[in-house]
Structures are given as structure tokens and as C-alpha cells.
Image (cartoon, rainbow, N blue to C red; front, side):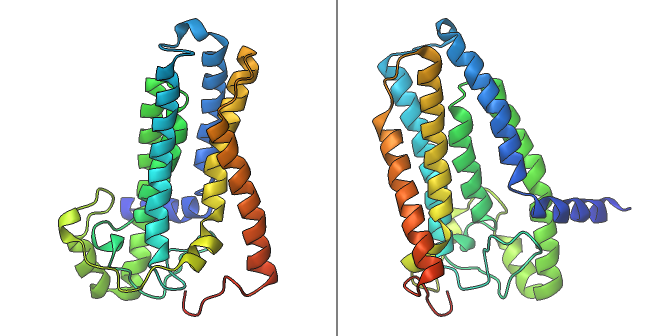
Length: 250
């Protein structure tokens, strides 16, 4: 099998299971985190304001990733930028808004969300390993997605892709979004992302406190987690039991 065909085949397979890698990395991260918290003498700034500031930096990076996702999804039409895993799907080429500066903004957002969590482990080599694994994993997924888009949209896609970076944004090429921002779509789609992010931060904090026997929980992390979980339940009900969040074409 030619290398191009092999990468596309791997990308299509990984596309179906693209939520698996972060979970595998999370397991390794939790093991390292438990080891770190079990040996607090080896943690620089442990129990000081510096550790708290570092935790908030991690949260800020995670929220940056969520913001990128929200901005991207909020300006897209229906049947694009989806969460589908069964197969590739796109009814048109998104080329305005954030898609005018980067071809894969959702994966860029995912990277920062998971980077924020990975940084909680506070292990330099683990963070480097995460970045490399993410690169190898998602490079193949992006290759497969682009092969699908080229086969469906042809020159229209290749012309846009030729001037738009794949992963590192070029802010000089920004064009105003062609669609207005849709909060209803965000509330339908990104409630999962918010809930998952805040749950992980609260989980790491609670686990660390239990291991050390301090029980001085970070109430910002805990409060955000409780709020996002309640919001998730409410929005899930509205999504499946009512038409409140429905919006034609979005």
C-alpha cells in the first residue's frame, strides 16, 4: 500500500476512535499525578501560591481551547464541523471566520483543552510526550479528512487550503464569519466539552487532596464542575425533549 493510501486508511480508522487517545493519555497522566502527589517533597512550590497560580494557568489554557471550539462551531452551518464518528461528513467548505486562518480549528481547540489537563501532571516529559502523540494521531486524521474534502469539493477546497494553514493560525488572512454566531448551536453542541473539561480539573484536584490528606479543595474547580454538570443535564433535556435549542440551518 502506498504511503498516501496508508495514511488515509489510518486516518479514517483513527477518525472513528478519535476520542480514545486522550483517554489513554489521561490514564498515564493520572498515574504520574498520583506518584507526584504521593511525593510532595519533589514538587517545586507544592502547597504554595505558586502551585495555585500554575493550576489556574492550566485552566486558562483549557478554556482557551474551549473558546476556540465555541467560536468555530458557533459560526458554522448545519452538517459541518460535526461530532460524527461513523464517517466523514460535510455539506460545504467552511472558509470564513476562524476557518479563514486555520483549516482545523476544532482540533486546535481540542489540543489546548487537553494540553491544559496534561499540564496538571506537572511532568515536563509527559507534556512533551502528549504533544508528540497528539501530533502523530491527529496528523493522520486531518490527512484523511482533507482527502475526503478534496474528493467531494475538488478545486474549491484546494484553493482555500493552499492559502490557509492546517494547524498554526495565520491571523493576517482573517475574514469576517459569513454566518452570525448561534448560541443555540453552542448550547446543543459544546455542553459536553465544558462538562468534560471542568470535571477533569475537579477530579485531579480532589484526587490530589485525598492523597495528601489536606481536603482543602479548589472551590473554583469544584464550583465550575457542579455548574457545568447541572447545565449539561438541563441542556440535554432541552435538546432531546423540546425544540427550544432548535435552529433552522444550524
